[in-house]
Structure formats: C-alpha cells, structure tokens
Length: 224
Ligand SMILES: Nc1ncnc2c1ncn2[C@@H]1O[C@H](COP(=O)(O)OP(=O)(O)OP(=O)(O)O)[C@@H](O)[C@H]1O
Image 1: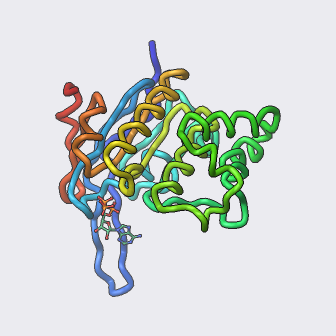
Image 2: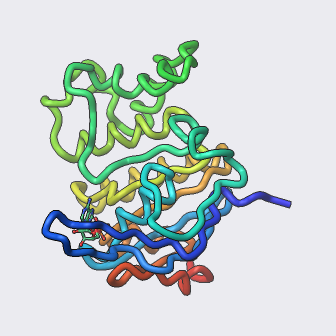
Image 3: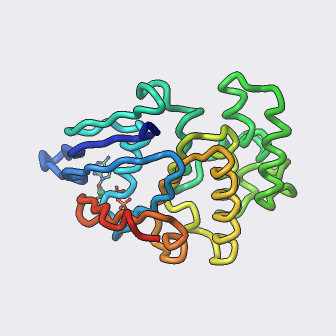
C-alpha cells in the first residue's frame, strides 16, 4: 500500500497577539497528501494558505490537531531533503552567486558529488543558465523566484511546497516554469502543494483545496 506523505487531522493554529487578543488562523483542517499529488491551495489573501503550508511542511507546529508524515518519518527528518519549500518572497543568500545558492542544499546535506553539475542542469532547464554567476541583488523579482524554485528542486524532494511561486511572473513564463517543475517532480513521483491566486496555475493541478477564513475544503479533490 502506498503510504501518505502527509496525514493531518483537525489542525488548528491560534496566535496570541501582544494586546491579549487571540486569532484562530487555521480551523479544523483535515487533509492528506499522496505521492504524485498535484494540489492547488486557493483562497483570498489572509485566508490561511501560508499557515497551512508551513504546518504541512513541518516548519510550524499546529496549536491543536495531529499531523504525521507516514512515508517521510519524523518532523526532524523532513528538511532539507524530503520536503522542499519555495517561499512567497524568495529567500536567496545575498553573498552567494545563483549557482552557489542552488547547489547549497546538496552541500549542506553532504551530497557534494555532482552538486554543481546538478545545479547547473536545473538552471539550464529553467532557462536561467545565463544568471549562474550573478548575485541575488542583481536579479529581478521573477528571476529570484525561479532561482528559488531551482534551489528547492535540486534535492529531488518527495514533496515540494510552493507559496505563490509564480506571483511575480507573466503568464507565459509561469506556464513554462510549471511545465519544468511538473516534469522534474514526475521523475521521482514527488508531490506538489502550491498556493496560488492564479486560476491558470491552479487549473494545471489535479486537486484543488479552497480556503476561507482559516477553513480548508478539499471538495475539489476529484477535479482536474
Ligand atoms: N505570526 C503571526 N502572528 C499573528 N497572526 C498571524 C501570523 N502569521 C499569520 N497571521 C495571520 O494569519 C492569517 C492568515 O495568514 P496567511 O499568511 O496564512 O494567509 P494567506 O492566505 O497565505 O494570505 P496571502 O494570500 O496574502 O499570502 C492572517 O490574518 C495573518 O495576519
């Protein structure tokens, strides 16, 4: 039987603000992710998409509920090789070149053999080879976003979690990026969870979850 990558029950996330107020930004979220899944998470700004993604990826603990990663192991086993993230604002290391940024996760994980060659190949398929020796400060927002995607893919993660990864891209570039990402993930039957406001991007996913004021509906699982 194929094991789930993520198995989450009745997740909630509550923040206690300095003024004493309590905000419940995630409520009763039950969902799971299987190998090979393609999931779009849609919903208005502030509905809780980023919160859900960081919890599913093990970066943030829920205030209530239960989450497990049956096929991946314990929370401490998840990063950097099993679950990779692309954050809303690209988080490249300023002093490192593009090529160094992309190969870094492999070096940190002790997989230095062929790290540079793998990073170069990914930059090439993403159409970014010409940027290899540039520093992050020399990149446009969209270029930085695509470099961050290369850095996430370089480890061949079992699950890629991407928070609005095409937000700064024109539609054509976004679609080309998505083609490459889906091809790369298909090689290892890896899953993708992607938060997006872009209907064209979300239509490329097989499943669609929608969020509204902290609640997630997975009714769109059959779609696409
Ligand atoms: N650390 C925090 N402390 C307090 N409130 C927070 C914190 N992080 C997020 N929130 C609140 O949680 C709610 C959900 O935020 P979240 O970033 O998950 O939404 P989102 O759907 O991803 O929004 P967007 O589409 O604008 O990125 C928002 O009201 C936000 O202000």
